[in-house]
Image (tube, rainbow, N blue to C red; front, top):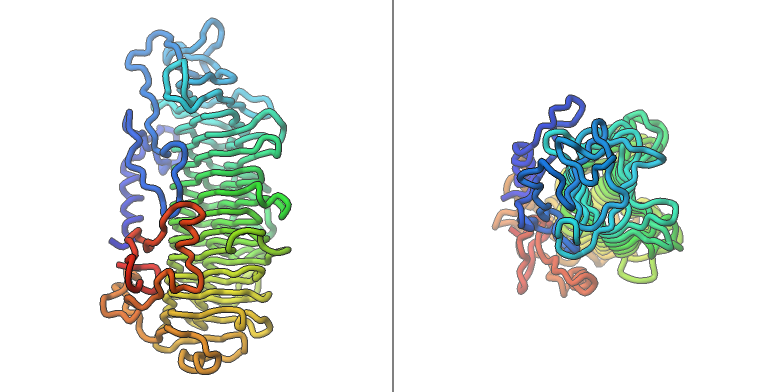
Length: 562
């Protein structure tokens, strides 16, 4: 089945199960996925993403069947009508007013209605443990929304701290948002799960973040899962200046964080991982951004700065909006991030699908740079002139070159330019890709830099009239390029024979010349697949639909094996 159709089907099936909140201002597209009691669910990890300490769809405890009297470990909180006087746990008919602080291990806290117990923050600190959950004794702290009267956070951030705190099903709006950790000592976070919640921002804000992590050198943040949430509508989409409003911000001193299956939309920026400086680069690492739906975002769907060991996998990113200060891009990286893996994403309707900016001092001391593998990039097109003066849309643009960039087994279609180098000397390994239906160039390397002499082009498939400009300002077809530069071995120039391009199916017909014409991993200039497994212990020798690539023989060019 085509991946794009599979995604559409999943979205449709999810929307069927939406739980109505009976509140006019609550988005009816918030996804509520109550897990099956006692089960980890059927969650399948995105390609290249390791297991966390729990599955994100882990079943939460059942609330008491009969809850007329207080029960140890089970709290019912409703701020508007509750009381904490002589009321340790509360019940639905006689609720507590506030969430206990801190929340003991083995607690199950149900919150109903608008919770606004505020000082500078609405504070939620958990004393959970990694043991099995036993009410009032051990295990994580569960803080969940009431099913009939949705839990809401308004006016202030919810500051979550502590250990093994699992937040499920909340609605944040009117200034409400989530902050994991604090800029002051005493609020360390580890083993935090935030899921099935909605964060709705304000379109007129001058900045801000709907979900952010705050780690400190003395108290780093670690082991965090952000799963199946909707973050949207923060910051205007037509601002003339960079206002730094975004859906999710992952900062320095944060590691082992999973951002999975969320929706980020209609905001001034999407997700950003930023260590802050080369000195702090090692403090933001092992961040997994995967299978999110990101759209109607200004500037960038996902941005990476300085950080290490970032895996960006299976995201669907589209309709990114150009800005006066930065070109629109589905995924962007700059300031010397290292071991960044951009794997099996679908990116469309952005002026640049994937963009690498300046290294700003050189890449990290370890690893092998940035790896762009197995992605489908389409419709990177500019009609007229963009804010930044660009007149051509770019599937992949690499502008930094302290270390190699590996562009392997991607499919790039319906773009102005397939792969480009705009400025600075870069080293590109462009191998096993399918580049089709470009308006201007398949490959365009600027003639004032040494990128052409430093780069490799092997076993790529172009249309019948290949258009290659290789650092000399001259457009070549494949034959003249090979003769002029003694490069391009294994490349093909003919119709790729997609199965159904009109239906966005860019897999290959059996008769396509790109079938079994790619280099096998050990014949690549550098075996990126073996390198990934050596680093993370996971085999990524699959295509964009998770179809296994053959262990012997040649692979198909492009993102599709079947």
